Image 1 (cartoon, one colour):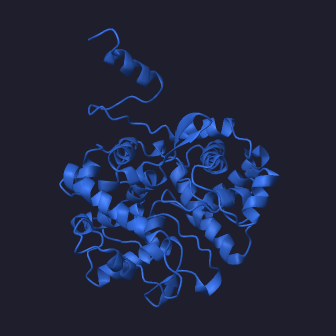
Image 2: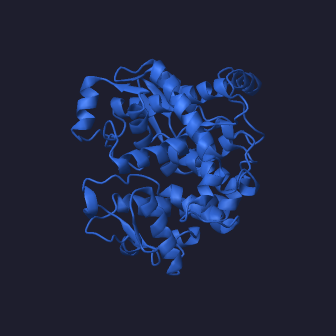
Length: 365
């Protein structure tokens, strides 16, 4: 070893001291997302966390989760989510989370993009799930990785057909969704024999490792940005893939992860909105005015990074506050995120939002 090479034993000792030790494959078992969120919070000037609001929200979330019996079972109870505990469900979840981004519409009301399926019209995230289920019903193998890389099978025109709308509104970022599918298909073919199960097995039941594998091997999952001179990680869709597996399989089989607590909330545009509504997040007047005016915030903009990072840290504080009240509840950031997302959609339906969600158009969320 030359003088300018790092001592691998010293590096591993340093990793362990920082809580980022690696497995036998050399892959870090922690994601660093929570630490980066705390850094963003500590350096944020446009978004703050109200501690009294956090305590009040923790009381509400705690009582509502108990009252509703919120658990991993809640995921499978939705009529559009798959019910089988097999490879088909794994493939379905991976496809969903490849494409799980940017559903907000610039068109309001009944003219926005929606998918008609099973006698109903579905919008937002559910429009994606409905479109995939409809495609499978039509014998289009949209959840099969080998299908994604055959240019004759999956064209832009065919994907547009899969996501055809019941209105004149179209799904945003169609080309980017096609790119994500094709990229993922190539990576899976090259590294995992076109098998999502092989990808999952490579992580050895470790949530942090699976998130890091996705971020390492799939550029479209590499949700990393710069803030105040530092690279920060959010990894929203990589984390939600692991969380959806855990929920769909009720923590067993393909959804068994010994460290599900490693996951944070999934930094999007809906959870910051409900955290603001609940009095947890506070926006600076310029930022709040910008959001209320429905003006775009570019991906990677400092304000957008603050919104996402402070949301992650706020949910961590909510989790800690809930555990103070009920230490044996077994709550984690995943379940809190699922609950807050559902609550945000309920408040939206009832017209009870305190502020619109921020508008950023990107593949990251």
